[in-house]
Length: 363
Ligand code: HEC
Ligand code: HEC
Image (cartoon, rainbow, N blue to C red):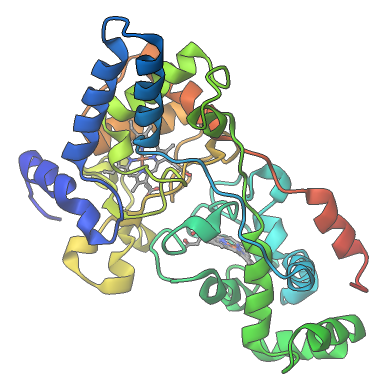
């Protein structure tokens, strides 16, 4: 384990978005926070001036509203939805993608680690599939670049669906309705790439726009309460926003878990999954480094962290403050930040549509 001093880490954090993030630097973000605060506490200027200052400030916020899902081919989406919910794709017919990514539960399963085919236990907490198309890479360690690349791995992962491509393609070919649907949509019918493409198209529709926070960002001053607003100010002022930023409030850079303290040493029992990005690059500097997760819909997705170790948002926020920022937040400050995080819950995808498709294999 490295013996980097806290001061060095702080410097590393400042320049870290260059590691693949599109984000602003730590210093710029904090500078903006201070500027924003002073813009808002100026002695009452003329009304129009005040309105334009607020508008400008909102435009320059480090968080942006979540865009609507990009348009997708409807037939592909329907096919992808059916594949997503079909347990026959697992080796023992017991789990589908939807078993671990329940759309009614924020796109995850609420377990510390998932249970796969034959009851196999996973090694990390299932992240949400909601808004995953907006993340710059997939998985906690970023090992898949796109949703297409990601979509095949659970099918053949022994601790997830435990199947193989030959079994999967054989099953789809033998199913009259699947083979007709693939034939209609893809000129080359059933193959691995088309299975991936259909699932990824469906996943791209699983976005949750129009959260109360987004309505506030767009100028609806009543959309969030004063406490929630104070929570957002704290989120910026203490530095959370240096890592959780952009329209997905995360998902655009890699960072070490334990910038200002040794999270893993304190937790104990370090396992391979804790090495994070190191498992992909084998670079020592990537040990304990993870993709910063999106905080969209985070109130629905407990437990938290790749190890599922935090049961509540309060615990997760306290751990972040301590290990990522070297700060201890009092109960009131934590509660405000948690209140803000709950404004990030957006419009949930229509689960009835998915259930109907699963029940009606003709589509
Ligand atoms: C047994 C539970 C389980 C099943 C079944 C499962 N997943 Fe997952 N999924 C997980 C876990 C756990 C992870 C995180 C793995 C990691 O990061 O190493 C994950 C990660 C993902 C991600 C990445 C999300 C992100 O933000 O990084 C996507 C997308 C996803 N799964 C989609 C699917 C699809 C599509 C299927 C079906 C083909 C599927 N999953 C089946 C448990 C499951
Ligand atoms: C230095 C970058 C960094 C800073 C600063 C930071 N985070 Fe995080 N955050 C991360 C990373 C990386 C993870 C994933 C850790 C893991 O599970 O491996 C994470 C995970 C989380 C999670 C859990 C999400 C989930 O789905 O499991 C929450 C909640 C969270 N952060 C909130 C905050 C809050 C609130 C602050 C400010 C007090 C903050 N973070 C500051 C990088 C950061």
